[in-house]
Length: 256
Ligand code: BEZ
Image (cartoon, rainbow, N blue to C red; front, side, top):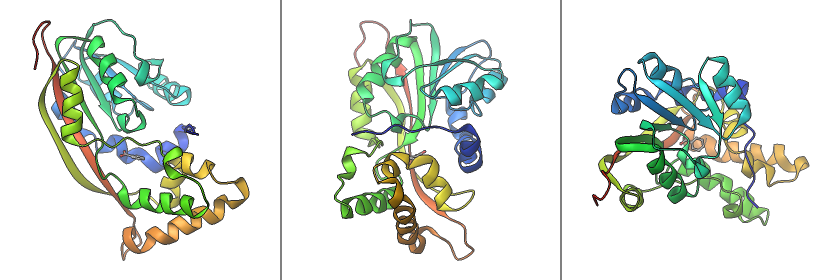
């Protein structure tokens, strides 16, 4: 059965601040203009949302995690809690922006349908998330360790990593014209040990194992990954691959 993630803003800030820090190219692709109305879908603790606010836009952040939304509110951001797969918004947004969130949403059709409804005609959908092959080394290690314990890893794997052609098709089906879409390998230096990353991001896999076995499970995965991802200087580099895109909502009646 699918397990949910408990986002802890403190732990996220310690182990995953780089997620927002690496968002600059995506902000450039968004190219926010003063007074534009922008939705940040899956805004997390609002670290990147703040930069869109700083560009003079009217920004709303949404996320499924109440803890993250509360952290974003502490930054003074307008926020609401919602599942991105169940957006129900009127067409008032000039742009929908999303960074490092869509790979947690397996129902891509539902996400894009909701985004299309939220955008004004000619509005833009600009995003980046884990693309096909993202953190494949880590995923393989997690899967192998669960399989060894007789657990089907796909029953708990929470990630959706799309390929460009597949995502383009879905966007087109929902009335978008794709301006740009590309898969970008981005080996990423982690701020600490892979254990910290696993504690934040691999919770559904960890929770599939009985509580008493979890330390051994994690040690096994760390050991498996060490020879591939740990560098001679002791730092860890994760094999991130991003899917970055910009799509424009067609005018009514126009098919892409
Ligand atoms: C990502 O940003 O690609 C990502 C982060 C954590 C888990 C999986 C993917």
